[in-house]
Every structure is written in structure tokens, then in C-alpha cells.
Image (tube, rainbow, N blue to C red):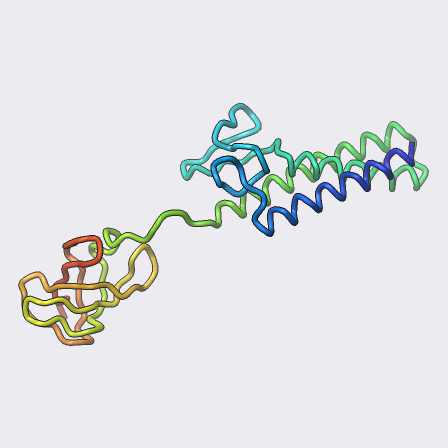
Length: 191
């Protein structure tokens, strides 16, 4: 029995290590280009194994990586318990507990990592209402540049003054509108 556990431990360890390396070098992705298990789509997971959040990233308990983690820890735990003289039934029960813990651990780790990623592009619409400062003079009825938060990051954006008045570099401004995808409309902030 111990030899079977050792053989299983080696096989699962190699497969689990291959999955982790594939994920790190970018080979692990589903059919929609999302990081995840090769060949598995998380978009159609339903039932108790998947609980989707509003951001499109769901917790997936049963996946290739979590099953490999289960097999790896189950077989290594079985090997160690049997080597220590634990009765076979108890070794299998303890191994199942360790395998389930590994499954949950890997699933939670991948869920947490996927929540860290950002998707989409920064949009100047997110700058409306934000305060900034003129970076390059805005001439009379012309375009200059302002330094303002866009999607949470400080960005230099083309800007025009709302009433056409010139604004010098360093002037505090408030974003009041959008002219186009690359240009915002600002007015001097009250002092």
C-alpha cells in the first residue's frame, strides 16, 4: 500500500509542478484567454462548486489544479502516515482531510490572485469631478495638458478650459467635462 502511495505522490507532484510552471509562463489559460486551467472555462461553472461575484471572477473549487493538489497532498500524507505505522484506514482518512485542505487552499489562492488583475482600459470619463493641476499652459481657446487622476492613476491628459480662458502651469483645476476620448474640459478650482 505504501508503494502505491509513493508512486501516486510522485506522479501527482510532477503533474502539479507542471501545471504551476505552465501557469507562470503563460501556458495556463482557458478557451476565453482567462488565466486558469488549461482547457477549462470558468464562465459556465454552476452549482455548489462555483460562486460567482459581481466582478466576473468566481471561486471554483473543482478544477484541474485543485484536483492535482488534492492528489498530491493525499498521496504524500498517505505515504507519511503509513511510514509512521498508522493503520491503513486511519491513514486514508487523514490523507483525505489533507487532500481536501489542499483543494480549498489552491482554489482560494487562485481566486485571490485572479481578483488582483485589472482588465479594461483607463477612460477619461473617470476623471470627471476630479481635481488636478495644469501641467502645460492652456492657451486662450487652446489645448494644454493637466495632471489628473484617471481610473485611479495620475495621468497627463490634454485639456481645454471651459470658458476659453488661459490657465498657467501649476493652476489648480477641476475636471468638468469631456471633449473627446483624449481631451477633457477643466475650470480653475476655487481657491
